[in-house]
Structure formats: C-alpha cells, structure tokens
Length: 554
Image (cartoon, helix red, strand yellow):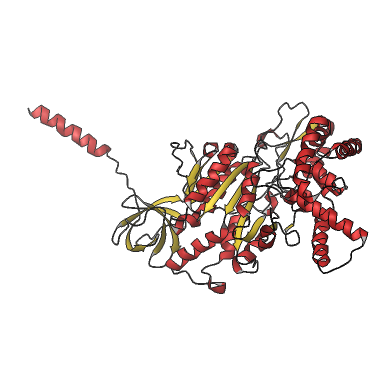
C-alpha cells in the first residue's frame, strides 16, 4: 500500500514540475451605454483603431472612437441585445472581410457573410476593410478601356481601367441603370464586377439581382448589400468591404470594377454614426471630415504598375516570378519597362536577354461611385467633394430624361479626364470631335427655337444632330458591342442617316447592325481584330453603307 502511495505521489510531483502555465491576457471592457447601432465601452485600454471586439452575447463590433476614458464601438449586427453592464473583449484582429474567387456569383452582407441562401462561402483569405491606398510610384497610366456598352459614354466620356468616374444626377434619372448596363457588358471581357448597394430597399436589390441573373452577369459579379433596414454602422463599412474584395483581384494582376450605389447614403450613414459617437462637426456642420471619408475610399482604385525582370532569351514561360531576374532586380513603377530596357542594353551580350512581365502585377480596380443630387445642384457639399476626388463625372439631367433622351447624359457638363487614352483606336477614329459637335448641336437647337428662318446649312446641321441624338438613345439593360457602336456612329457622322425619318431611326439602326453582321461580316471582324479602322477596311465599310442605304426601306 505504501508503495502505491509513493508511486501516486511521484507521478503527481512529476506532473506539477512539468506544468507550464500559459497566460492569455485579454482586454475586457464593460458597456456604459448602447443604442442605435453604437456602444460606449470602458476598460479596453489596449484596443486598436478598427479592431474587432466581441460582446458577451457573441455580436461583433469595431473600435471606432478611441477616447481617453472610453471607446466608441460601432456594432456589426443586431444591437438590440446589447445592454449596459455587458462585458466586451478585444480580439486583437483588425476588421476584415473574406476575399477570393469563391465570392463571385454570390450576394453577401457588409461583413462578407452570404445572404443569398446558397450555403457557406469556402474562402480562406481575409483582408482588412481599411487599407492605405497604393502610392504614386506603384501606379501606371490608365490606357485600357472599360466598355460600358453605352454609346454616349464610350464615344464621348470614356472610362478606363483604374479610373474613378462619378455618375451623378437627380433621383430617377437612370444612374443605377448605367451601372447595371456596364456590369452586363463585361460578360466575357475578363473584368470582375462588385456592386455595393448602400441604404437601398431589399426589394430594389432583389430586382437588380434578377436583372443580372437573367443577363448571365452574375457569373462575373459580386453583390455587397447593406440595406436600408440595417444599422448605419453596416452601411458605413459596406463600401470599404467591397473595395477590399476588389483589391484582392487587383493585387493578383486581374481587373475589377466596383460600383458604389450610392455614396450620398454612405455620407448620411457616417453622419449618423458620428453624431451618436459625438464626433466634432466639420464644415457645413457635417460631422467629421466627409472629404477624407470618401477620398481614402476612392484613392484605393488604381491601375497598378507592371513589374518586369530581365531573363535569358530562351526563357519558356509567358510570365516570370520576381526571383527569375538574371541580375536579381525587379523593375517596378510607371516607367518600369523603360528602366528594364535600359538595363538590358548595358548588359554584355544584350541580345541574349529579354524583358518579361512578372506574374500577378498590373491589375486594376475601376470605381464608378454614384451620387444623388437635389434639383441638379452639383455644388452641394458631398457632390463637390466627390467630384474633386474622381477623374471625371457622367452628369444625368432630369430635363433630358423627361424629354425621352435616355441615357440622359448632359454632354456639356460631363467629362472624362482620361479622355481618348481610354478609347480603342476605332472608337477614337469615329468619335473624334463628336462630343463637341453634340454640345454645339444642343446650343444651336436652343437658338433655333427663337429663329423664324434658318439657312440650308443650319437646317442640315440641325437635322444631322437630331439623328445623332436618336442614335445615342438606348434602352435599359441592352448594352451595345464595340463593333456595333463604331459602325453606327461612323454611319451617322458621315451622313448615311441624313435621309432617314426621325421616328424610323430605331429601326434603321437595328437593320444596319443586322445587315453588316450578315452581308459584310468581314468588316466587323477586321475592326475587332485590329481595334481600328484601316484604310482598306474604311473603303469596305463605306461600300457596305452605300449598299445598305440603297436597299434599305423603312
């Protein structure tokens, strides 16, 4: 018996000696007050800005305000169960969302959680919702088009990959329709789309989802939803979550497009959160700095610079890794290719080497933020802020919309600071002075209303302008392919539609596209292949248009 006791004692002694206590230090706070999607917490002394915190009922929140005696937390979920005295723990993890290809085709909330009833999303990658935008040296020029499929935009206000182009106008002028058309038109164009719905009714989001599904566009689209009945905190964080999802594609060398619908509601959500957390008011009594709110969001959209390395001439792969460079250098930045070429020229036996792009570089994130105006006032606080941040704006006018001109793009106010750099050569050839001509036509049309007698040249100019305006009209959710746009605009600007009655222009345009596809398919194929109208193809195009004009009957 004594031997057994000794054995047990010896075993216990060994266990005690081998015990190594692990200390986990966790900040624990207490809720002082809660309500309307926010909570004020005391005791989280070491919490970081944007750190996730967890309430004792399992609801997550984000540390938003770091004050001397308390922490302002925005609640990321149901806040009605959070009460005074409830404990809160820091997680030591910055607010983040799941990212990756698994999200494509899905509808998620502002936290990246699926809400479409299609089961869990199998992704292991996460990104913080807030990140510093890429610096200037890591960007390159915008010179690759995003084809919206809308003739008036692609011809006169082109959008490029990596650009920030604002869509602005009054309520019910077709802003969302332009965004949806752009998404639909990206089918098969290797551009992943992210649609962020902020403060919208769930019925409106469901309608948008239905349109995209019927068009087959959900195959390349992710929808992020922070609906009108959700907390202001979730509406505030939604566009940042969508941007993080898009950055994952951009930084892997792919192209993505993100639409914020809309940033007016985002500013309202931020104002609500700020007032509840007692942030000091700024200019025009808007709490905090709304300009900084949107600038740090939109600046994350960019076209990243390609990286290049120098490899041997017999290098077999289409793209290289950063370790494959023969001189151990990776050339990056806006002039990276020129720098690599200069370095290659100074190498001994320079002809034995070549320059090759590093895989996973040169991706882009294009943003189309939407802003709602009141009575066309683009000088209000939030619109002027976003206009100053973006690379141009597409202005939709109520008067044009009510007059049946849809999309209701005001050419005189709209602008793209990228301009022709973001157009294919074919579109640039036919568009040319098209934007200026249409602006001049609208001024002339307004003048003609007061004139009793017009000379023949003025009448001819007005007539052509009227027909070009009819050509630019386009039904919702029916984007036009680039080759069709080029042919129709070429025909209109060169007078092939001058004899067509205005009420027959829709039929004329449809018949022309059908005629060119069936009778002269080689013309369109040549434009697609070369992305330009060559001299030979121009002659063939004119011949085809002459044949169409001769044989066409309304």
